[in-house]
Image (cartoon, rainbow, N blue to C red; front, side, top):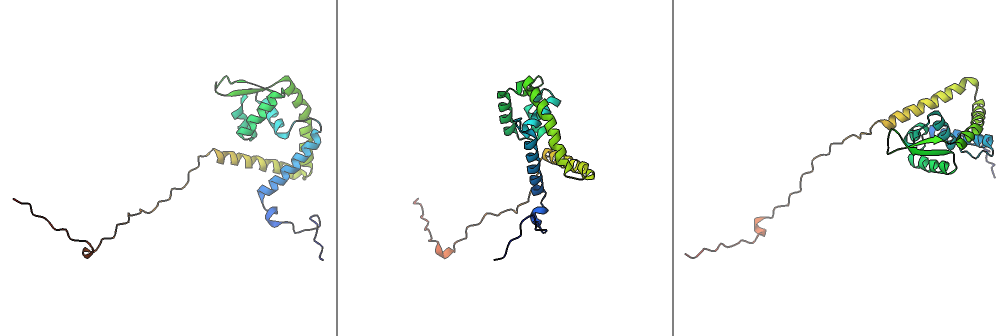
Length: 193
């Protein structure tokens, strides 16, 4: 029975996956989240919760719509997260002064304390991740990721216009004419005068 090579020993890799940006980004995200979890320890703040706390700290009074745009977290997930973070006492919500239909979010004292604890841990997780690359590639990576996100945001903001295909006019099918022989002849009756 032939032994299969272990993934570590194989130099060929999986070309389809090795050339797939979405797969590679997914793998890099897994690595980043693992490092984040190790650095956070018992902090109990997820990476996305950290993103929300940091965004709110930087721009106090953001609406939840603003947070969706800034963090990239989808609307329904962010609404659930905000509700849980409010229940934990990390955030508070009030009506926006600029739009009565929207909720503005701000940090509570507990939210500021939690952010003060996790911010240095996030910096450490990011530093560990970047140390895996040579110094010359670190800025190239973050720059390329920022450019990818910017381009994606711009593409998402453009209205989608699908090409209009001209469809050929479909003519109504005409009923075949019956031969005169097929039709019974009607006799005309003369009216009596």
